[in-house]
Image (cartoon, rainbow, N blue to C red):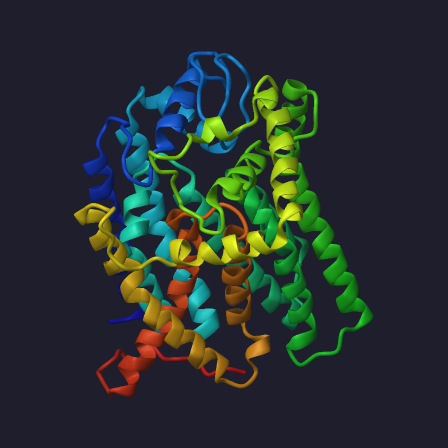
Length: 440
């Protein structure tokens, strides 16, 4: 079987299981484990479709007043749903199936492209196959939330960065390479602004790549690097700017994209937890809205978000030791792979069969990579840096398993490398035209 046929089979399989997930979720939007936010996106999209703009008809999560402007939710994803409903009517199933089809086709393809550059065709193909059937990614493919498109955006960013690094190495980098990277960053940030934290790391890796591929950093290379970064920055800024301007017109203050970081940081580090974080407040604890000080509740959403961020930072300054212990306590929540009595049978099965099976092979892939010479020049370094940076952001703030899913998608490339290495170690048959690439 050649590479093209193998990849096509993987993509067909990925689309099929995601469409099955979408069909299971159906044409209604109801609260379900891990995807409760789809109710907010559905409601907001129908409000926009009916001409009410980005508002809710009743008081809404987190503390948005009826009829008041909200920037808590991704504008671009809401507009995606609105566009689908304007063409096909308000049928969530249509949006689910479109999203599932795009995800099924693009996610394995992007993982293969990244994986083959990092570890070779075979490891990339195994990673693509794993992503195709990974339970969490299949489940969220049909959910009307940002997760699926956001993960696709991250993979696109990493693929763009890999190609830019290769072009820098070959002295063939053009403005188009950098422009595509900027568009990928901008669109991904419009889905979730937290990805902007990783962008400086990505750009530093590109600078390192310009130095690290056995070349001296000449004046021409430096000019190409600086000019390229400027092109990327301008493209990203142009995509983000309309949302920022729109937010200023509604709230009278600067809001880059969304008004949710303050809420998350305040709630994640509230003294109510003590030293031990819990992902969802239990029935014997006050509700999230009750934790917000009464004197702040009259503020609009943007002002409240800013005020809560200040309060959250003050929690850290008041007791840095507690903040450290609280952040450490988030590790089991973030990396949970074992069954829990608090979860249903299906949730436990998906958790164990997805991350529980993948984690040992991810670790094996990391160990094998670290044992190779020249690892600092490999694309695998960027993938590891993404996992480290993105995980650190959530361990220091709000932590849920679904916030780990972008890391899962990227680290399955390491799992593919680990699994193929085991396969080869035991001498099992493998197509001759799919080989493991040697490191530099």
